[in-house]
Image (cartoon, rainbow, N blue to C red; front, side, top):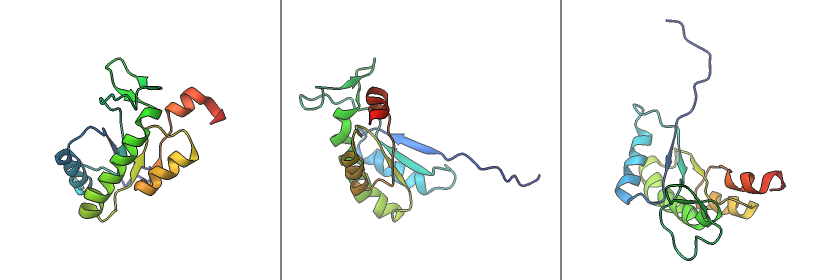
Length: 133
């Protein structure tokens, strides 16, 4: 079998801010295990938690989940928690975190980077604000 020079796609696992610590720890451990081939972690997906604070301009899905700007603080805190309690302890920071959820300004992106994100993913702000973002 010839060795291919083609680039292999990266595998990222996207997690919800609603996961319990036991699941976050499992994700961190799996990211170290070469059998799973996980190249990074995307934090965070939608949240099912609806509070008075985070539903004002929420982007709701048909399943009742919240995403977009109302997810900003929740996802940033999830990044911080995952980075401090699991990623540093278990992986020595070797697994990149892609921060997403409510990024609608440079400050939002910077906050996620300061919390532990290596990269930032944009979606809702581009969808709703277009290239004016």
